Length: 267
Image (cartoon, rainbow, N blue to C red; front, side, top):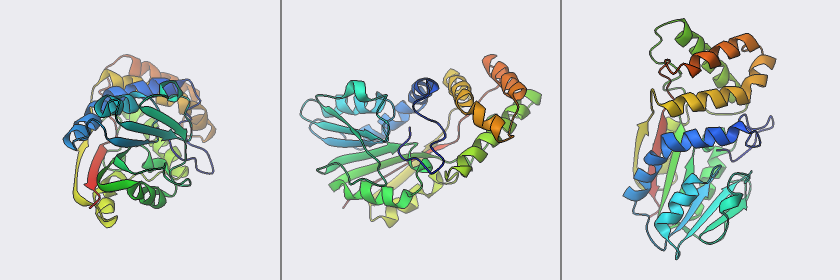
């Protein structure tokens, strides 16, 4: 779920076929968490929502169910390939860069971004624009990864396959950092929301272990970045093939980086 390219390009290109597989796995892993928070914030019929860096359609569709025909969901991304099919009616899809373009017209009861800002170079400006788009009493819900808190793909590093998986995950983190990703961004969200002037700030964190969707996500991610891992000398083709074969066994107990959800209300 990308919103802003760095000079080197977004690492997980949405134009690649694996992006759809990744979006499906991310939705299975994190949609229940996202909508638990959305429902706790009272997002309901007739409200206006801005989904930033929508990527795939699952979150815009879930928001549309909650706001109903009298509400609005604006879904934006720099690449709308995967959301174009849901444009119309309650959902409006716009090509948009949150760190460079003005917010969509109007004000919003909810502005939400998931796994977006960690990849954005000018995160402070993106956050400022999202806060600006809130109506008084509106909620900002940010959900982002913090690979620095839990850097291992296999927290239970019990054998050579798990150690090999963790070495490849280290290569993935190196590629992300080289493109401007902040691998410790998630933990800063509560403070950043308070500093932005929001009230009633709270946060929690979630990361799954040993889900089939974790296996699907890992395989699709490695296939997306395979060329870069090899080109940067972070892994060989043989090492990648061995890792993918290990993932396919379903016995590695894979985890994701923690996703930290933080929310606050505009006074």
